Image (cartoon, rainbow, N blue to C red; front, side, top):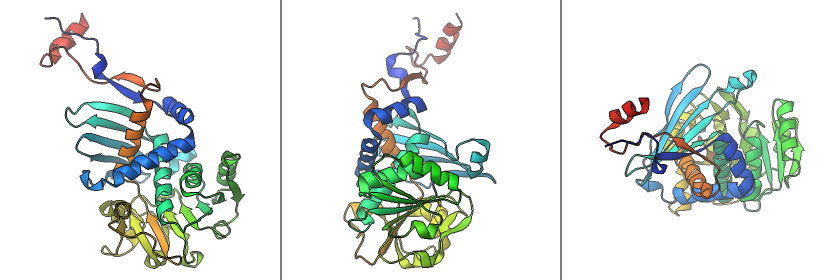
Amino acid sequence: MMTNTTPSAKALVPFVSVDHMMKLVHHIGIEEMLRGIADYIETDFKRWELFDKTPRVASHSDTGVIELMPTSDGDVYGFKYVNGHPSNTADGLQTVTAFGLLADVATGYPVLLSEMTLLTALRTAATSALVARVLAPKGSRVMAMIGNGTQSEFQSLAMKTIAGIDEVRLYDIDPAATAKCAANLAGQGLKVVSCTSAQDAMLGAQIITTCTADKQYATILTDNMVGAGVHINAIGGDCPGKTELAPAILHRSEIFVEYPEQTRIEGEIQQVAADHPVTEFWKVLTGQAKGRRDDQQITLFDSVGFAIEDFSALRYVRDQIAGTGLFHPLDLLADPDDPRDLFGMLQRAKA
């Protein structure tokens, strides 16, 4: 029996390239896409207990980190490959790049391969804004954005779209980064204020987002800079030895995390005792834990990013690309007519 050497449609895996991801964002609209991803994340957080969970597998070097982030809900498996190399920008390279995959648990066959450099920025911002919508003071309208690199515009638009802010106050130690962010946010429906210090940026802010890139213990926020009643969205600390907040702030705050076993290794809470109390955010969404209790409370989202958020974002993309043509059918899987005759398929390809 002849064995087919041409891949069948069932063996082709949809691949969403960077070009297709950009077109998908514009096809849907960036604010609508942020809302959609946040909805998928919320749905998956509410079924948190169904997922396989493990701290990401990290390979650290002097210049950065390369990580694998896997999870499964029992029906679909997903993972993300991601790096973090702060010095890359000096060479004209991205600090963070990523790609991800979804697979059918029943067969093990991949069902989606996607770029995740853009998608990670979108899902990180969507997660931040979802948490802020739940934990920030009611009626919050002003956010301080400390660190105006790659994430800053996504964070600002997500906070506008999902959490309801209408003013963002920008600060970065590099004025060019602030100018870039301000220019990109022009005409996006936000009042944008460029500031010359972190203290200036925080004036009147109910939400404070820190997102810096240096791989080191740092103090972006000192204790005296943080007043009562604010929500801190700390997303820059994401590996051992890298933090942004003075330890005293942690002791004054109610701390919310994604997955404690990972956050205690990589997040701000690596600075405090291993038994320092934290609340898993999924429990707030399911009513198993309280969120903000009063107007004077400081809430802190110590976010390092977790695989379930990537899983949610990939699920969203998988559902949105249907009928759009915004993907490449990728010949990734061998598909002989007789699944036992892989060698025969190889030999016939030579002919």
